[in-house]
Amino acid sequence: MMRSGRMLLLALLLGLWGAAGAAAEPGPPLFAVTLAPAAPDADGAVRAIDVTLEIDGIAAAAGAPMLRLPIVANTVETAADRIEGLRFRDAQGAFEAPTRDVAQDDANRDRLWLAPRAISGALRVAYRVPIDPARPPLAAPQYELRTEDGTVSGAATAFLLLPRDTVARRVRVRWDLAAMGSGAVGISSFGVGDVETRERYLPERLNGAYYMAGRPGLFRSSDGRFFGAWQGKLPFSGESLMRWAAELQSFYGDFFDERPEQFGVFGRTNRLNPGSGIGLTDSFAFTFNAESTEADLRGLLAHEMLHAWVRSLGETMDAPGGLAASWFGEGLAVHYQRLLPYRAGLISADAFLDDLNATAGRYYTNALIGTPNAEIPGGFWRDTRIRVLPYDRGSLYFAKVDAQIRVASGGARSLDDIVRAMLVARRAGEPMDQALWERLLHAELGDEGLAGFRAMLAGEVVMLPRGAFGPCFRRIERPLRRFELGFDPETLLANPRRVRGLIAGSSAAQAGLREGDEILNRFPQDAMQGDQAAVLTLEIRRNGETRTIAYLPRGEAVLVPQWERTGAPGCDGGTPVG
Image (cartoon, rainbow, N blue to C red; front, side):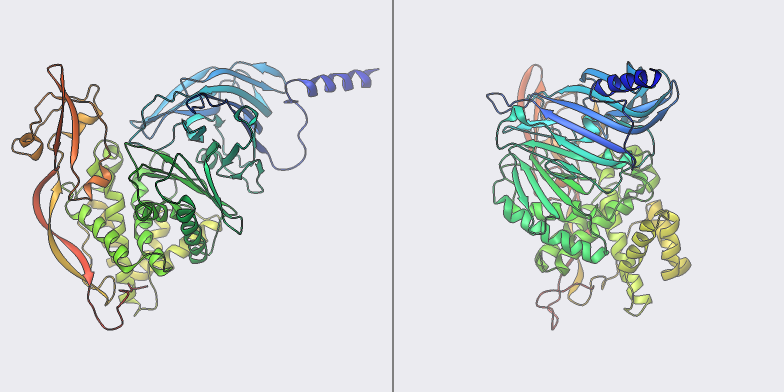
Protein backbone atom coordinates (compact mmCIF):
# COMPACT_ATOMS: atom_id res chain seq x y z
CA MET A 1 0.00 0.00 0.00
CA MET A 2 2.83 2.37 0.88
CA ARG A 3 4.52 1.68 -2.47
CA SER A 4 1.30 2.31 -4.42
CA GLY A 5 0.78 5.59 -2.52
CA ARG A 6 4.24 6.76 -3.54
CA MET A 7 3.55 5.84 -7.15
CA LEU A 8 0.31 7.84 -7.04
CA LEU A 9 2.15 10.86 -5.65
CA LEU A 10 4.79 10.57 -8.37
CA ALA A 11 2.09 10.38 -11.04
CA LEU A 12 0.47 13.54 -9.66
CA LEU A 13 3.79 15.38 -9.71
CA LEU A 14 4.42 14.31 -13.29
CA GLY A 15 1.09 15.73 -14.31
CA LEU A 16 1.65 19.12 -12.72
CA TRP A 17 2.54 21.83 -15.24
CA GLY A 18 4.55 19.71 -17.62
CA ALA A 19 6.22 17.54 -14.99
CA ALA A 20 8.45 20.30 -13.70
CA GLY A 21 9.30 18.24 -10.65
CA ALA A 22 9.97 14.95 -12.42
CA ALA A 23 13.27 13.18 -11.93
CA ALA A 24 15.65 14.35 -14.65
CA GLU A 25 17.14 11.90 -17.11
CA PRO A 26 20.83 11.25 -16.50
CA GLY A 27 23.08 13.55 -18.48
CA PRO A 28 24.18 17.16 -18.62
CA PRO A 29 21.79 19.80 -17.26
CA LEU A 30 19.48 21.45 -19.79
CA PHE A 31 18.34 25.00 -20.48
CA ALA A 32 15.12 24.63 -22.47
CA VAL A 33 13.29 27.63 -23.92
CA THR A 34 9.96 27.54 -25.73
CA LEU A 35 8.88 30.71 -27.52
CA ALA A 36 5.33 31.32 -28.76
CA PRO A 37 4.98 34.63 -30.63
CA ALA A 38 1.50 36.12 -31.00
CA ALA A 39 -0.18 36.37 -34.38
CA PRO A 40 0.86 39.44 -36.41
CA ASP A 41 -1.79 42.15 -36.47
CA ALA A 42 -3.10 43.90 -39.59
CA ASP A 43 0.05 46.05 -39.69
CA GLY A 44 2.37 43.04 -39.45
CA ALA A 45 3.28 43.74 -35.82
CA VAL A 46 3.82 40.88 -33.37
CA ARG A 47 2.68 42.45 -30.11
CA ALA A 48 3.67 39.78 -27.60
CA ILE A 49 5.69 36.63 -27.11
CA ASP A 50 5.06 33.91 -24.53
CA VAL A 51 8.13 32.42 -22.90
CA THR A 52 8.48 29.09 -21.09
CA LEU A 53 11.81 28.12 -19.52
CA GLU A 54 12.79 24.76 -18.03
CA ILE A 55 16.16 24.96 -16.31
CA ASP A 56 17.99 22.00 -14.79
CA GLY A 57 20.53 22.23 -12.03
CA ILE A 58 19.25 25.30 -10.20
CA ALA A 59 20.55 25.56 -6.63
CA ALA A 60 19.81 28.61 -4.49
CA ALA A 61 19.46 29.01 -0.74
CA ALA A 62 16.57 31.00 0.66
CA GLY A 63 17.11 34.68 -0.13
CA ALA A 64 19.88 34.00 -2.66
CA PRO A 65 19.76 35.22 -6.28
CA MET A 66 18.22 32.58 -8.53
CA LEU A 67 17.62 34.25 -11.91
CA ARG A 68 18.72 37.46 -13.61
CA LEU A 69 17.51 39.82 -16.33
CA PRO A 70 19.07 43.21 -17.06
CA ILE A 71 16.82 46.23 -16.63
CA VAL A 72 19.31 48.24 -18.66
CA ALA A 73 21.95 46.51 -20.81
CA ASN A 74 24.60 48.84 -22.22
CA THR A 75 22.12 51.78 -22.03
CA VAL A 76 19.28 49.73 -23.65
CA GLU A 77 16.08 49.36 -21.62
CA THR A 78 14.95 45.73 -21.66
CA ALA A 79 11.57 44.09 -21.09
CA ALA A 80 12.21 43.67 -17.35
CA ASP A 81 9.54 46.21 -16.34
CA ARG A 82 6.97 44.94 -18.85
CA ILE A 83 6.87 41.21 -18.08
CA GLU A 84 3.36 39.88 -17.42
CA GLY A 85 2.02 36.77 -15.66
CA LEU A 86 5.37 35.62 -14.27
CA ARG A 87 5.09 32.13 -12.69
CA PHE A 88 7.65 29.85 -11.03
CA ARG A 89 7.50 26.14 -10.14
CA ASP A 90 9.99 23.56 -8.90
CA ALA A 91 9.66 20.05 -7.48
CA GLN A 92 8.06 21.43 -4.32
CA GLY A 93 5.39 23.36 -6.21
CA ALA A 94 4.56 26.86 -7.39
CA PHE A 95 6.05 29.89 -5.67
CA GLU A 96 6.53 33.63 -5.99
CA ALA A 97 10.00 35.16 -6.07
CA PRO A 98 10.90 38.56 -4.62
CA THR A 99 13.25 40.76 -6.63
CA ARG A 100 16.22 43.01 -5.99
CA ASP A 101 17.56 45.58 -8.45
CA VAL A 102 21.32 46.05 -8.63
CA ALA A 103 23.19 48.80 -10.49
CA GLN A 104 26.40 47.58 -12.14
CA ASP A 105 27.39 51.00 -13.54
CA ASP A 106 25.80 53.90 -15.44
CA ALA A 107 25.02 51.71 -18.46
CA ASN A 108 23.98 48.44 -16.80
CA ARG A 109 21.40 47.58 -14.14
CA ASP A 110 20.13 44.10 -13.26
CA ARG A 111 17.00 42.64 -11.71
CA LEU A 112 17.58 39.57 -9.59
CA TRP A 113 14.86 37.08 -8.65
CA LEU A 114 15.52 35.67 -5.19
CA ALA A 115 14.68 32.20 -3.93
CA PRO A 116 11.89 32.46 -1.30
CA ARG A 117 13.05 29.09 0.08
CA ALA A 118 15.75 26.63 -0.83
CA ILE A 119 15.49 25.83 -4.54
CA SER A 120 17.17 22.87 -6.21
CA GLY A 121 16.82 20.73 -9.29
CA ALA A 122 14.58 21.63 -12.23
CA LEU A 123 12.89 25.02 -12.35
CA ARG A 124 10.05 26.03 -14.66
CA VAL A 125 9.34 29.69 -15.46
CA ALA A 126 6.58 31.09 -17.67
CA TYR A 127 5.65 34.67 -18.61
CA ARG A 128 4.54 36.97 -21.44
CA VAL A 129 6.49 39.88 -22.90
CA PRO A 130 4.41 42.63 -24.59
CA ILE A 131 6.04 44.33 -27.59
CA ASP A 132 5.25 47.92 -28.55
CA PRO A 133 5.73 48.38 -32.32
CA ALA A 134 5.50 52.15 -31.91
CA ARG A 135 8.69 52.40 -29.85
CA PRO A 136 11.25 54.29 -31.96
CA PRO A 137 14.39 52.47 -33.11
CA LEU A 138 17.47 52.99 -30.98
CA ALA A 139 20.87 54.42 -31.85
CA ALA A 140 22.22 51.82 -29.41
CA PRO A 141 23.02 48.10 -29.32
CA GLN A 142 20.21 46.18 -31.03
CA TYR A 143 19.15 44.06 -28.07
CA GLU A 144 15.51 45.03 -27.59
CA LEU A 145 12.57 43.07 -28.99
CA ARG A 146 11.44 44.72 -32.23
CA THR A 147 8.74 43.77 -34.71
CA GLU A 148 7.94 44.54 -38.36
CA ASP A 149 6.78 42.72 -41.49
CA GLY A 150 5.22 39.89 -39.48
CA THR A 151 8.53 39.13 -37.76
CA VAL A 152 9.93 39.70 -34.27
CA SER A 153 13.53 39.58 -33.03
CA GLY A 154 15.69 40.39 -30.03
CA ALA A 155 18.59 39.28 -27.88
CA ALA A 156 18.21 37.07 -24.82
CA THR A 157 19.67 39.83 -22.65
CA ALA A 158 16.53 41.87 -23.38
CA PHE A 159 13.82 39.39 -22.42
CA LEU A 160 15.00 35.97 -21.11
CA LEU A 161 15.40 35.28 -17.41
CA LEU A 162 18.67 33.38 -17.05
CA PRO A 163 20.31 31.43 -14.22
CA ARG A 164 22.42 33.41 -11.78
CA ASP A 165 25.08 30.72 -11.54
CA THR A 166 28.08 29.33 -13.41
CA VAL A 167 26.61 26.02 -14.57
CA ALA A 168 27.17 25.10 -18.23
CA ARG A 169 23.99 23.67 -19.76
CA ARG A 170 22.93 22.14 -23.06
CA VAL A 171 20.35 24.25 -24.88
CA ARG A 172 17.00 23.17 -26.32
CA VAL A 173 15.02 25.71 -28.34
CA ARG A 174 11.42 24.98 -29.29
CA TRP A 175 9.18 27.25 -31.35
CA ASP A 176 5.39 27.32 -31.04
CA LEU A 177 4.49 29.18 -34.24
CA ALA A 178 0.86 28.10 -34.53
CA ALA A 179 -0.41 31.68 -34.09
CA MET A 180 1.88 32.97 -36.85
CA GLY A 181 0.37 30.72 -39.51
CA SER A 182 1.89 28.39 -42.09
CA GLY A 183 5.28 29.32 -43.46
CA ALA A 184 6.52 30.92 -40.26
CA VAL A 185 10.01 29.96 -39.10
CA GLY A 186 11.88 30.36 -35.83
CA ILE A 187 15.64 30.99 -35.77
CA SER A 188 18.08 31.37 -32.91
CA SER A 189 21.83 31.68 -32.48
CA PHE A 190 21.75 27.90 -31.99
CA GLY A 191 20.26 27.17 -35.41
CA VAL A 192 17.20 27.25 -37.65
CA GLY A 193 13.99 25.77 -36.23
CA ASP A 194 13.80 23.53 -33.15
CA VAL A 195 17.32 22.64 -32.03
CA GLU A 196 19.14 20.90 -29.20
CA THR A 197 22.85 21.48 -28.74
CA ARG A 198 25.61 19.07 -27.82
CA GLU A 199 27.72 21.95 -26.55
CA ARG A 200 27.12 23.32 -23.08
CA TYR A 201 26.74 27.07 -22.55
CA LEU A 202 27.45 29.16 -19.49
CA PRO A 203 24.74 31.71 -18.57
CA GLU A 204 26.85 34.58 -19.94
CA ARG A 205 26.81 32.89 -23.35
CA LEU A 206 23.07 32.17 -23.11
CA ASN A 207 22.72 35.89 -22.48
CA GLY A 208 24.35 36.60 -25.86
CA ALA A 209 21.97 34.50 -27.98
CA TYR A 210 19.58 36.04 -30.52
CA TYR A 211 16.06 34.97 -31.50
CA MET A 212 13.94 35.77 -34.58
CA ALA A 213 10.56 34.41 -35.66
CA GLY A 214 8.06 35.05 -38.43
CA ARG A 215 8.79 35.39 -42.14
CA PRO A 216 12.30 36.80 -42.37
CA GLY A 217 14.58 36.48 -45.37
CA LEU A 218 16.64 33.33 -44.88
CA PHE A 219 19.90 31.97 -46.32
CA ARG A 220 21.58 28.67 -45.43
CA SER A 221 25.00 27.60 -46.68
CA SER A 222 25.38 24.34 -48.58
CA ASP A 223 27.36 22.76 -45.72
CA GLY A 224 24.67 23.71 -43.20
CA ARG A 225 27.14 25.50 -40.91
CA PHE A 226 26.17 29.09 -41.71
CA PHE A 227 22.81 30.83 -41.87
CA GLY A 228 21.63 34.40 -42.29
CA ALA A 229 18.22 35.87 -41.51
CA TRP A 230 16.95 39.42 -41.97
CA GLN A 231 13.84 41.16 -40.70
CA GLY A 232 12.60 43.81 -43.15
CA LYS A 233 13.58 44.40 -46.77
CA LEU A 234 17.24 44.73 -47.74
CA PRO A 235 17.79 47.21 -50.62
CA PHE A 236 19.87 44.60 -52.48
CA SER A 237 20.15 40.82 -52.69
CA GLY A 238 20.28 39.40 -49.20
CA GLU A 239 21.42 36.07 -50.59
CA SER A 240 24.43 37.71 -52.29
CA LEU A 241 25.53 39.35 -49.04
CA MET A 242 25.06 36.19 -46.99
CA ARG A 243 26.84 34.01 -49.53
CA TRP A 244 29.85 36.35 -49.28
CA ALA A 245 29.66 36.25 -45.49
CA ALA A 246 29.51 32.45 -45.48
CA GLU A 247 32.68 32.26 -47.56
CA LEU A 248 34.49 34.71 -45.29
CA GLN A 249 33.34 32.95 -42.13
CA SER A 250 34.76 29.69 -43.48
CA PHE A 251 38.07 31.45 -44.21
CA TYR A 252 38.14 32.79 -40.64
CA GLY A 253 37.65 29.26 -39.33
CA ASP A 254 40.66 28.03 -41.31
CA PHE A 255 42.78 31.01 -40.24
CA PHE A 256 42.03 30.63 -36.52
CA ASP A 257 41.97 26.80 -36.78
CA GLU A 258 38.58 26.71 -35.09
CA ARG A 259 35.05 26.97 -36.43
CA PRO A 260 31.76 26.95 -34.51
CA GLU A 261 29.45 24.04 -35.19
CA GLN A 262 27.01 26.60 -36.53
CA PHE A 263 27.14 30.37 -37.03
CA GLY A 264 24.32 32.82 -37.69
CA VAL A 265 23.80 36.40 -38.85
CA PHE A 266 20.69 38.41 -37.99
CA GLY A 267 19.74 41.68 -39.70
CA ARG A 268 16.94 44.15 -39.11
CA THR A 269 16.08 47.67 -40.19
CA ASN A 270 16.95 50.77 -38.19
CA ARG A 271 16.47 54.16 -39.84
CA LEU A 272 18.29 55.96 -37.01
CA ASN A 273 21.34 53.75 -36.73
CA PRO A 274 21.99 51.67 -39.87
CA GLY A 275 25.30 49.89 -40.14
CA SER A 276 25.64 49.05 -36.45
CA GLY A 277 26.37 45.58 -35.14
CA ILE A 278 26.62 43.55 -31.96
CA GLY A 279 28.64 40.40 -31.43
CA LEU A 280 26.61 37.52 -30.00
CA THR A 281 27.01 33.85 -29.12
CA ASP A 282 28.19 32.12 -32.32
CA SER A 283 26.34 34.85 -34.22
CA PHE A 284 25.85 38.58 -34.51
CA ALA A 285 23.15 41.12 -35.36
CA PHE A 286 23.38 44.13 -37.66
CA THR A 287 21.16 46.98 -38.81
CA PHE A 288 20.40 48.46 -42.22
CA ASN A 289 18.08 50.96 -43.90
CA ALA A 290 16.89 51.76 -47.41
CA GLU A 291 20.20 53.48 -48.25
CA SER A 292 22.52 50.72 -47.00
CA THR A 293 24.84 49.24 -49.61
CA GLU A 294 26.13 45.72 -49.85
CA ALA A 295 29.73 47.02 -49.76
CA ASP A 296 29.13 48.88 -46.48
CA LEU A 297 27.50 45.88 -44.86
CA ARG A 298 30.30 43.56 -45.98
CA GLY A 299 32.69 45.58 -43.81
CA LEU A 300 30.30 45.36 -40.89
CA LEU A 301 29.86 41.60 -41.30
CA ALA A 302 33.62 41.14 -41.58
CA HIS A 303 34.05 42.88 -38.22
CA GLU A 304 31.23 41.29 -36.27
CA MET A 305 31.94 37.73 -37.43
CA LEU A 306 35.45 38.04 -36.01
CA HIS A 307 33.99 38.23 -32.52
CA ALA A 308 33.22 34.52 -32.72
CA TRP A 309 36.99 34.14 -32.20
CA VAL A 310 38.25 37.55 -31.09
CA ARG A 311 36.68 38.58 -27.81
CA SER A 312 37.69 40.82 -24.94
CA LEU A 313 40.32 39.67 -22.49
CA GLY A 314 38.99 37.58 -19.64
CA GLU A 315 35.51 39.09 -19.57
CA THR A 316 32.55 39.61 -21.86
CA MET A 317 31.80 43.11 -23.09
CA ASP A 318 28.63 43.40 -20.97
CA ALA A 319 30.44 42.37 -17.78
CA PRO A 320 31.90 44.95 -15.38
CA GLY A 321 35.40 45.75 -16.59
CA GLY A 322 34.72 44.45 -20.10
CA LEU A 323 34.96 47.92 -21.64
CA ALA A 324 38.45 48.40 -20.20
CA ALA A 325 39.56 45.36 -22.21
CA SER A 326 37.83 46.43 -25.42
CA TRP A 327 41.12 47.72 -26.87
CA PHE A 328 41.88 44.04 -27.44
CA GLY A 329 38.63 42.56 -28.74
CA GLU A 330 37.48 45.55 -30.76
CA GLY A 331 40.93 46.69 -31.85
CA LEU A 332 41.87 43.23 -33.06
CA ALA A 333 38.56 42.85 -34.88
CA VAL A 334 39.08 46.15 -36.74
CA HIS A 335 42.64 45.12 -37.63
CA TYR A 336 41.55 41.78 -39.07
CA GLN A 337 38.28 42.99 -40.64
CA ARG A 338 40.28 44.51 -43.49
CA LEU A 339 43.31 42.22 -43.55
CA LEU A 340 41.67 38.78 -43.63
CA PRO A 341 39.01 39.54 -46.28
CA TYR A 342 41.80 40.92 -48.46
CA ARG A 343 43.92 37.81 -47.94
CA ALA A 344 40.86 35.73 -48.83
CA GLY A 345 40.41 37.64 -52.08
CA LEU A 346 36.98 38.86 -50.94
CA ILE A 347 37.74 42.61 -51.02
CA SER A 348 39.95 44.71 -53.31
CA ALA A 349 43.11 46.62 -52.45
CA ASP A 350 41.11 49.84 -52.70
CA ALA A 351 38.58 48.51 -50.18
CA PHE A 352 41.48 47.57 -47.87
CA LEU A 353 42.84 51.12 -48.11
CA ASP A 354 39.43 52.72 -47.64
CA ASP A 355 38.95 50.84 -44.38
CA LEU A 356 42.47 51.58 -43.13
CA ASN A 357 42.29 55.28 -43.98
CA ALA A 358 38.85 55.68 -42.42
CA THR A 359 40.15 54.19 -39.17
CA ALA A 360 43.31 56.30 -39.21
CA GLY A 361 41.39 59.44 -40.14
CA ARG A 362 38.95 59.05 -37.26
CA TYR A 363 41.74 58.27 -34.78
CA TYR A 364 44.20 61.02 -35.64
CA THR A 365 41.48 63.71 -35.81
CA ASN A 366 39.99 62.66 -32.46
CA ALA A 367 40.31 65.58 -30.04
CA LEU A 368 40.36 63.07 -27.14
CA ILE A 369 43.06 60.89 -28.71
CA GLY A 370 45.15 60.95 -25.53
CA THR A 371 42.45 59.57 -23.21
CA PRO A 372 44.03 56.82 -21.06
CA ASN A 373 42.52 53.37 -21.41
CA ALA A 374 41.54 53.38 -17.72
CA GLU A 375 39.11 56.23 -18.47
CA ILE A 376 37.37 54.43 -21.34
CA PRO A 377 34.64 52.70 -19.24
CA GLY A 378 33.58 55.97 -17.59
CA GLY A 379 33.19 57.81 -20.88
CA PHE A 380 32.26 55.02 -23.28
CA TRP A 381 28.51 55.70 -23.32
CA ARG A 382 28.85 59.42 -22.63
CA ASP A 383 31.03 60.65 -25.49
CA THR A 384 31.34 59.17 -28.97
CA ARG A 385 34.96 60.33 -29.21
CA ILE A 386 35.86 58.09 -26.27
CA ARG A 387 33.63 55.26 -27.48
CA VAL A 388 35.51 54.85 -30.77
CA LEU A 389 39.00 54.93 -29.23
CA PRO A 390 39.25 51.19 -28.38
CA TYR A 391 38.39 50.38 -32.01
CA ASP A 392 40.70 52.88 -33.68
CA ARG A 393 43.63 53.00 -31.29
CA GLY A 394 43.52 49.24 -30.73
CA SER A 395 43.49 48.55 -34.47
CA LEU A 396 46.48 50.75 -35.23
CA TYR A 397 48.36 49.43 -32.20
CA PHE A 398 47.98 45.85 -33.49
CA ALA A 399 49.15 46.93 -36.95
CA LYS A 400 52.21 48.48 -35.31
CA VAL A 401 52.94 45.35 -33.24
CA ASP A 402 52.56 43.21 -36.37
CA ALA A 403 55.13 45.33 -38.20
CA GLN A 404 57.52 45.25 -35.22
CA ILE A 405 57.35 41.46 -34.89
CA ARG A 406 57.98 40.99 -38.61
CA VAL A 407 61.09 43.17 -38.40
CA ALA A 408 62.35 41.55 -35.17
CA SER A 409 61.89 38.03 -36.57
CA GLY A 410 63.18 38.75 -40.05
CA GLY A 411 59.75 38.06 -41.48
CA ALA A 412 59.43 34.63 -39.85
CA ARG A 413 56.71 35.60 -37.36
CA SER A 414 53.87 38.09 -37.02
CA LEU A 415 50.97 39.18 -34.84
CA ASP A 416 49.07 36.16 -36.20
CA ASP A 417 51.32 33.85 -34.20
CA ILE A 418 50.51 35.60 -30.90
CA VAL A 419 46.77 35.61 -31.59
CA ARG A 420 46.68 31.95 -32.52
CA ALA A 421 48.70 31.06 -29.42
CA MET A 422 46.18 32.93 -27.25
CA LEU A 423 43.27 31.07 -28.81
CA VAL A 424 45.01 27.73 -28.28
CA ALA A 425 45.48 28.65 -24.62
CA ARG A 426 41.81 29.56 -24.28
CA ARG A 427 40.70 26.27 -25.83
CA ALA A 428 42.94 24.48 -23.33
CA GLY A 429 41.09 26.18 -20.48
CA GLU A 430 43.80 28.70 -19.63
CA PRO A 431 42.91 32.35 -18.91
CA MET A 432 42.99 34.46 -22.07
CA ASP A 433 43.86 37.62 -20.23
CA GLN A 434 46.21 40.60 -20.31
CA ALA A 435 48.90 38.65 -18.48
CA LEU A 436 48.96 36.10 -21.32
CA TRP A 437 49.14 38.90 -23.91
CA GLU A 438 52.07 40.49 -22.07
CA ARG A 439 53.97 37.19 -21.81
CA LEU A 440 53.62 36.47 -25.52
CA LEU A 441 54.40 40.07 -26.46
CA HIS A 442 57.53 40.06 -24.31
CA ALA A 443 58.70 36.84 -25.93
CA GLU A 444 58.54 38.57 -29.33
CA LEU A 445 59.61 42.17 -28.55
CA GLY A 446 61.17 42.12 -25.08
CA ASP A 447 61.00 44.99 -22.60
CA GLU A 448 60.62 47.53 -25.40
CA GLY A 449 57.44 45.81 -26.55
CA LEU A 450 55.96 45.90 -23.04
CA ALA A 451 56.88 49.56 -22.66
CA GLY A 452 55.11 50.36 -25.93
CA PHE A 453 52.03 48.46 -24.82
CA ARG A 454 51.82 50.31 -21.53
CA ALA A 455 52.34 53.64 -23.27
CA MET A 456 49.41 52.84 -25.56
CA LEU A 457 47.20 52.09 -22.54
CA ALA A 458 48.29 55.38 -21.00
CA GLY A 459 47.06 57.26 -24.06
CA GLU A 460 50.24 57.78 -26.05
CA VAL A 461 49.44 58.37 -29.73
CA VAL A 462 50.11 55.25 -31.81
CA MET A 463 52.36 55.99 -34.80
CA LEU A 464 52.97 53.27 -37.38
CA PRO A 465 56.25 52.86 -39.27
CA ARG A 466 56.12 53.93 -42.91
CA GLY A 467 56.45 50.35 -44.15
CA ALA A 468 53.88 48.88 -41.76
CA PHE A 469 51.84 47.38 -44.60
CA GLY A 470 54.67 46.28 -46.86
CA PRO A 471 56.21 47.64 -50.07
CA CYS A 472 52.89 48.03 -51.90
CA PHE A 473 51.54 50.78 -49.62
CA ARG A 474 53.19 53.96 -48.36
CA ARG A 475 52.28 56.37 -45.59
CA ILE A 476 51.50 59.96 -46.52
CA GLU A 477 49.84 62.88 -44.74
CA ARG A 478 46.58 64.63 -45.56
CA PRO A 479 44.79 67.56 -43.86
CA LEU A 480 41.55 66.40 -42.20
CA ARG A 481 39.23 68.27 -39.85
CA ARG A 482 38.45 67.20 -36.30
CA PHE A 483 34.95 65.99 -35.41
CA GLU A 484 33.21 68.67 -33.35
CA LEU A 485 29.55 68.64 -32.34
CA GLY A 486 29.82 72.29 -31.38
CA PHE A 487 28.29 71.77 -27.94
CA ASP A 488 28.76 69.65 -24.82
CA PRO A 489 28.03 65.98 -25.74
CA GLU A 490 26.50 65.55 -22.26
CA THR A 491 23.57 67.44 -23.76
CA LEU A 492 22.53 64.26 -25.56
CA LEU A 493 22.27 62.29 -22.30
CA ALA A 494 19.96 64.75 -20.54
CA ASN A 495 16.16 64.68 -20.50
CA PRO A 496 15.10 66.98 -22.06
CA ARG A 497 18.15 67.38 -24.27
CA ARG A 498 18.78 71.12 -24.12
CA VAL A 499 21.94 72.43 -25.75
CA ARG A 500 24.58 73.52 -23.30
CA GLY A 501 28.22 74.47 -23.70
CA LEU A 502 27.69 75.86 -27.21
CA ILE A 503 31.11 76.66 -28.71
CA ALA A 504 31.23 80.22 -30.02
CA GLY A 505 32.25 80.33 -33.68
CA SER A 506 31.66 76.60 -34.20
CA SER A 507 29.87 75.28 -37.25
CA ALA A 508 26.87 74.56 -35.01
CA ALA A 509 26.73 78.17 -33.77
CA GLN A 510 27.22 79.53 -37.28
CA ALA A 511 24.32 77.36 -38.52
CA GLY A 512 22.03 78.97 -35.96
CA LEU A 513 22.07 76.59 -32.98
CA ARG A 514 21.57 78.40 -29.68
CA GLU A 515 22.21 77.64 -26.02
CA GLY A 516 19.08 76.07 -24.53
CA ASP A 517 17.66 74.73 -27.81
CA GLU A 518 15.96 71.39 -27.23
CA ILE A 519 17.21 68.62 -29.56
CA LEU A 520 14.30 66.42 -30.61
CA ASN A 521 15.87 63.82 -32.93
CA ARG A 522 18.45 61.12 -32.30
CA PHE A 523 21.38 60.35 -34.58
CA PRO A 524 24.42 58.05 -34.67
CA GLN A 525 27.80 59.69 -34.21
CA ASP A 526 30.40 56.91 -34.32
CA ALA A 527 30.34 56.46 -38.10
CA MET A 528 29.87 60.20 -38.64
CA GLN A 529 33.26 60.84 -37.03
CA GLY A 530 34.98 58.89 -39.80
CA ASP A 531 33.13 60.68 -42.62
CA GLN A 532 34.58 64.12 -43.33
CA ALA A 533 31.58 65.02 -45.52
CA ALA A 534 28.78 63.83 -43.20
CA VAL A 535 26.25 66.57 -42.44
CA LEU A 536 24.50 66.59 -39.07
CA THR A 537 20.83 67.52 -39.16
CA LEU A 538 19.21 68.55 -35.89
CA GLU A 539 15.51 68.95 -35.25
CA ILE A 540 15.23 71.49 -32.45
CA ARG A 541 12.52 73.25 -30.47
CA ARG A 542 12.98 76.90 -29.46
CA ASN A 543 10.32 79.06 -27.84
CA GLY A 544 7.68 76.49 -28.75
CA GLU A 545 8.63 76.45 -32.43
CA THR A 546 10.24 73.49 -34.22
CA ARG A 547 12.95 74.05 -36.80
CA THR A 548 15.74 72.17 -38.59
CA ILE A 549 19.42 73.08 -38.42
CA ALA A 550 22.06 71.33 -40.57
CA TYR A 551 25.82 71.77 -40.48
CA LEU A 552 29.15 70.00 -40.97
CA PRO A 553 30.26 68.94 -37.45
CA ARG A 554 33.93 69.72 -38.01
CA GLY A 555 36.52 71.93 -36.35
CA GLU A 556 40.18 72.65 -36.95
CA ALA A 557 42.19 70.88 -39.68
CA VAL A 558 45.19 68.70 -38.74
CA LEU A 559 47.66 66.65 -40.78
CA VAL A 560 47.00 62.94 -40.32
CA PRO A 561 48.68 59.75 -41.60
CA GLN A 562 46.98 58.04 -44.54
CA TRP A 563 48.11 55.29 -46.92
CA GLU A 564 48.18 54.94 -50.69
CA ARG A 565 49.54 52.48 -53.25
CA THR A 566 53.22 52.73 -54.19
CA GLY A 567 52.90 51.29 -57.67
CA ALA A 568 56.01 49.17 -57.01
CA PRO A 569 56.68 46.17 -59.30
CA GLY A 570 54.48 43.21 -58.41
CA CYS A 571 52.03 45.43 -56.53
CA ASP A 572 49.24 45.64 -59.07
CA GLY A 573 46.87 44.28 -56.47
CA GLY A 574 48.50 46.28 -53.68
CA THR A 575 49.06 43.15 -51.58
CA PRO A 576 49.66 44.10 -47.91
CA VAL A 577 52.17 42.32 -45.71
CA GLY A 578 50.85 38.94 -44.56
